[in-house]
Each structure stands twice: as C-alpha cells, then as structure tokens.
Image (spheres, rainbow, N blue to C red):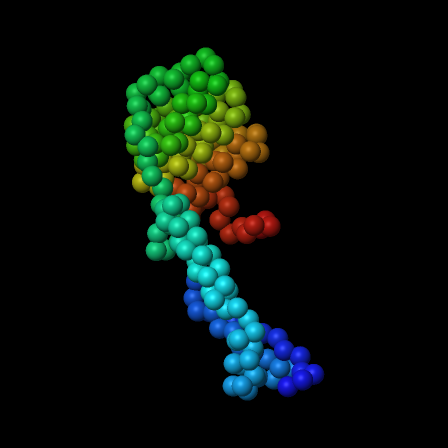
Length: 191
C-alpha cells in the first residue's frame, strides 16, 4: 500500500440526506483492508458530530422561520387597528401615511377593510414612496383580499411614471391575478 495516493469521493444524497464516503486509491475503489485503514486514520466521530450539528442547526432555522413541509415560509397576519390606520392614511404628512401603510402590510388579509383607502393612496398620493408602499400592501394582502383591486391596479400601472412604483404594482398584480399581469411571458432577463 506504500506509495499509493488516497482520496475520498463524497456523495451527498439530498438535503440532510445520507452522506456516503467512498475511498479511492489512485482513482480506483479501495479494497476492504484499505478502507478499514483509512477509517482508522480519520477521526470520523468528529466528522459525524459536525455533520449532525449542521443538520440540527438547519432544522432549527427551518422551524424558527416557519418553513412548512413544502419549504415555503408561512406568513403570519398581525392584529391591527384598521380604522385608526385608515384615518392615518389621510394625514398631510407623508411619513404618517407611510407608517400606516407599513402597519397595514403587516396586517395582511386583516387589512381588507382598508382596501379602498389603500387604492386611493396608490392612485393619488404625490409621494412616490407612499405609492410604492401602497402597492406593496396590496401584494401582502394576497389574492383573496385584494382581488377587487385589479381594475385600479391596471389604471395605476398605465398612468404611473415612477419605475419603482410601477414594479411594485406589477408585483402586486402578479400576486393577485398573474394570468393578466403585464409580466406574463417574461423571464428574469426580460421578454
């Protein structure tokens, strides 16, 4: 066995799946004796410990972020005071309107009673950041809650000049009714 070079071929089967180490000597599979000698030279207990620690950390991270069995993060709606936030949307200060929209976005489908006020902000607010956030709130509300907004989204998309606001309108439109979205048939690099 002297003079032969050894290496390990690592085979990983799926995320957090089985890990198989295949010993190779000079590019060919190892004999059982060579395999046993290599195992003794390596401290595989440390390797297994580190692998199990990594697997545990990954599972903990998935649990902590709310990943379900399908790998998607589950959104949680926040309880909000919709009436107070609707009043705040009428403020003369854009920062107040923006803060109200942030809270409404956190409320997700609980923000449905404020849909008309959000659409009013989207179509008529002078501040682009506020209009951008209004479109984002519609995205957060989801298909079921924001479905009545499609006609207004189409109008807002047609008249909007700010590209960032327009992008958020398209994102909301994709979340609500993707089959009619202006991005239909486009990929990440364009048409």
